[in-house]
Length: 306
Image (cartoon, rainbow, N blue to C red):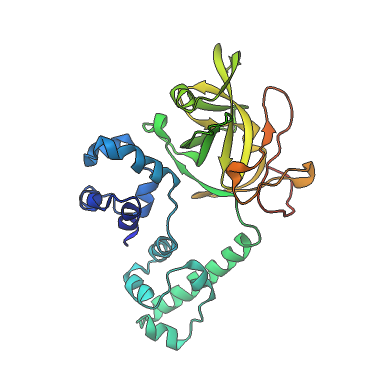
């Protein structure tokens, strides 16, 4: 797999491929979770860190990496080079492949048990893709440990999204958020909000389970996939998305993935153009008591949000 090398080459940092490989950051899913500790482990120069971390936060695994994981999952990784040689580097291609004797010969799969295993895996893939292709997700989240919770015992639902200032300069930053369905609000680290120069609304009483504290309230835009919301956000010591954002979407959660699907469009949402950053976002203010609406660049019907 050359996904990590391609990622580095795309940001003109191919010189670091050797140290990535030596230190064990050689899978594409390693890229998505890069943080400052990883930079220290690999000795990445300070002047290159910000660019690398920003690119990593927005990175999505390649189609070929999806095939790699799929073969690994079904105990067929031994044949990966044969799949690549036959241009089977996309799960869509695999779902459509005709598994006849000619295909098995091309893939050099002669063991009967492995042939049967591949047939079974492709059948499962076709069934899964039929379900997924009925609707394209807005984005895909995952189980993981966000920065402030790296020492936690269990994983949390996480999603990558961008915070954008509502001021004319529209500064933005990509962040890893914890998905906190137990909270009504969105939180972002205070230093991040200061860097973005977001609109300051004032100080509020934030009521937690055990205490009430005074915290700063800001307004910003949040972009998840192609959907952009305007929302109030509380300055805190971690980045999280609460119910004021979550309820804009429908959700499918498995033991490995979290699909964010378009929400209820009976609320007459405005649709974002191809360039979401230039679109008029939906108002989404948890403190006003209004129910927020999501916008997207596609107009499709959907069921009620979860």
